[in-house]
Image (cartoon, rainbow, N blue to C red; front, top):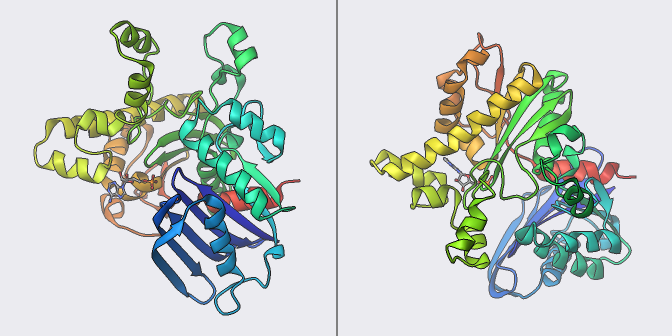
Length: 394
Ligand code: AMP
């Protein structure tokens, strides 16, 4: 079965066409700056190695972006399928829909439920709704499947989901801890199972532009550092992470508007807010090495958040077999891995400094032989997780 995986950003579209089962990627594609006349279009045929990148393209809608990609897929010379009708399913890395937390066909009812939570996940649900509606028109009759970022976390026990709020808020509005980054943490569980025969007790640290930790027990999620919205948990690149709800009424009373507060929490907080330098850890590390104290504070606060959740999940899991780093920061920042692992040596974690410093695109173990806990770096592959779940969906 040909499964197209579609990852939608606020101004970007990323595609991968898989041949399932077998996890084989046939072609990938990317459109950047959707909605502009200087869009960038990329297509790659994974079978032949042919790639093309076109700049200054007029790609004014998601529909136009996907049409271009479909034309490349069916191109007689560089395509990988004879006709578009070969595509049986499209899988989306959707985020949140009220009342639909698993893997669902994207019916009108599910799209309405995404609309209902637009205010909780505006940066994600808005672009996805627009793109899904347009793709429905470009690929009529194809089954569209939403692999919601909450899906891997539906196994988290209720006692860890419920907030200490009036129970009616939970019943009426669905306010509870949701958990996100499900495609990434689910893929980590798959890799540990393939490579170690099971996950046992594992902590997966997805550290990127947004970050979360997931406690995994025997293949399923039992906790995740995200709460109701994606503004929670760890400090993110621009988003605030865990904070005190009473900061909001206090700031309102000081005369700040709701718009100013949400902008502060979504765009001006996180690593950028603390460091005042950048939302990119690479820039912050360079500034800290140059003596910038706020940059150093941002790194220390970021790592403190990770250490906090590693400790919490160690207690919840009752021990630890695997600690995994993934995502742009998790895969690339040996400094963050060193600081986190160095703080929890009493859990039996011993890092191999040389292995930690090495770079590789493959999943690898970076702990010393003597370490009781295996420490891994596993490159994120959310698209493969989405392709597998979309293919399996019944
Ligand atoms: P992601 O959202 O998973 O693509 O991660 C993107 C983030 O990874 C960037 O914003 C950087 O902060 C971080 N990153 C990428 N490469 C490095 C590196 N070599 N060292 C530190 N951080 C990195």
